[in-house]
Length: 328
Ligand code: AQP
Image: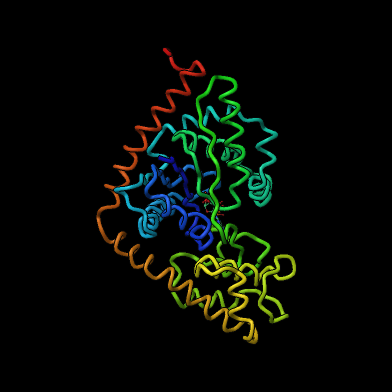
């Protein structure tokens, strides 16, 4: 059986980008040995308000279930409830070099926004992420395109560990979706849609149908009024086409053909809004039921216990290999 690990951080309300790039893929791995984590310790690499973090963590766990993950089949848990994550993270940080961490694109972008008061955790986030993955000996990590560089670092650190201390960790690969691997902002299609940069260019999974429709209607396009994919000259329309393709299952070319005779982008936007609303409606209904019910805590407690069994075993292996354990 293939081992799958992935996580999302509760650093804001989940976006359509998080869903299409990551969560929609999670569901396809339910017959494997799969671990889906709410990576709350990654969220604190930028300042978080305690009450909000607690609420968002719970909300994200409910969204995992609402999007179709079955806790009988997969392990769903909160990162901070399995201390082995932070323990292996320290080992991975010690193996990392400052230069390689400073070169990470996401670090440079986020640190750039914070100017002089940059939390050290922001720099250390990629080796922590490596620890999350290696702790389960994951074969594949379903992620969006923006996480490719961190996955590469994970492989580098695993290789470095294995070379120095003997074969211990499996080298994982990134598993990215076919379409919409990088959903862009509807207002600035050169910028990734991000949960921590929420504005009218960001579709949230819990947005009402009216809000979704308004955001899509106002999405930035171009004045050519011809529907075709061209990332360089038509980034707005290309982004909308990718979203349409990811949800409908049609190829971009099939969509272009469908609207060949249609004047302007109006009808295309109306249809896209209907597709997104249709995708989100059952997830939102399921989410409301979970949040009103009482099962969530039991699911998360059982998940943390299950995850810890595997995580502790692999942590000990690493500690033994590098001389941190008293015995071998
Ligand atoms: N716009 C996107 N398109 C496709 N996939 C995306 N992901 C994020 N944004 C897009 C994928 O969703 C998962 C979320 O991972 P994360 O929460 O750990 O971090 P992130 O990539 O930094 O996500 P955000 O939404 O941009 O959060 P903030 O704003 O807090 O940094 C990953 O698999 C990611 O690839």
